[in-house]
Image 1: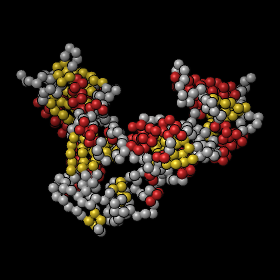
Image 2: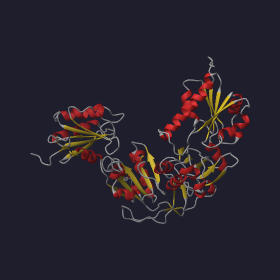
Image 3: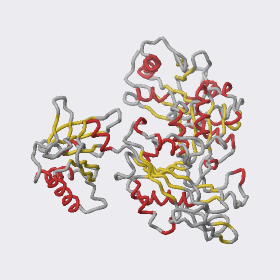
Image 4: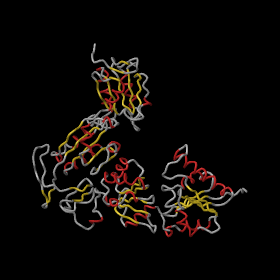
Length: 555
């Protein structure tokens, strides 16, 4: 029997397990609901119903939504995804029958409904059809943090919530890049999660919490957990205070002054040993006894108040990661990255470096190259071995020049700097196209961030007049969309419209494309920041197979 008045659908968070953590609003809605729905495991009683059982009215209609599969295999032709999609559709049909009949439906959701909750999939299906609402609940990680009685984040700490199902290298990288973390979805993923914590240097101080707020609750250090004992209702808490580079003493050593061999230094807090010493990095450093000779060849030890303030100079390695594929990373660079203690660079490049135990990552945004270089030099001056990473070759519009620019400061005179070559973007695009730079060629950047556009135009005219092959880096960006068109017009002043042009986009990556066109037909709208453009010389030609090459000779 249908009615013109439809029922209302409410997704109600009921917390992690302790019925006393159910909110007053959730309890009121449950107690007044004519229909109560809840999920249940394949062969298990509903955990959600157990939590809220004392609040469910005796006269309420109950709808148990039993999963067809959780983590096991399925014979469904669509696999796990297909089986679950079909399940949610069948649940929607069952609950919509009540809603269409004018009966309100409350769907119980463990923890918070929109935090890795199954209830969100029914909410997605109903929110455009019925009147819906969501009542927040206490998430499991809040109960877990309370169980271990350790602050999760403080001050400006960043909290990252991660599923344990992420690939281990990705999980390790993200753990290394955050102050605090919560890791959900454990069970069979626990061994890989533990390994990722170790690789990120976050195993010590990480807590395993099982069945938070429930009678069976238990917690212990992750390092002490038997992997075979990890149930689904478990998670890992990685407090911000446990971060090795945190600018504060860990909880275990709170109140203890830092010793000379374990100084805690931060961006804003004076060194515990000497209030006149300010530092520019967040790390825990060993105070070395002496400083070896650096680039200047001298060996000097400076002290202040009986404590060395001029630690052993480390080394800065400026390395090129190549344009993208791991196969284009040189063995020399790979070996160097395996030895350094710190990686500094633009975030997308830092993210390409695999995380391992003992490696600290220092990612930053674009256009702060010199600041990044100073940070690396400060680390090296403090005795650390640092890799500054660039895409392609670090010496071609990369970080190498920025490091030497920053190192002009006399404060870094004793820091050793080495540059390790990488496969450049122009080499990669040229190889994909054939041999367009087989003769004399020039390389330019169209960015006018560090030079006037008039200088760019003068150099374009000089290259065109010299009839050189020209590789153009940074042909466009979000804020510079017109410059490639201007460059084309300048080149056409002296080059013929049928001059061969190559446009390489994302070369070496899955979405790479290579276009061979002419200077006259070059469409500026097709060029973006992911492109490198090669403009041929008058002798550059295209084979019948579409490959581009430039003769070595001039006749």
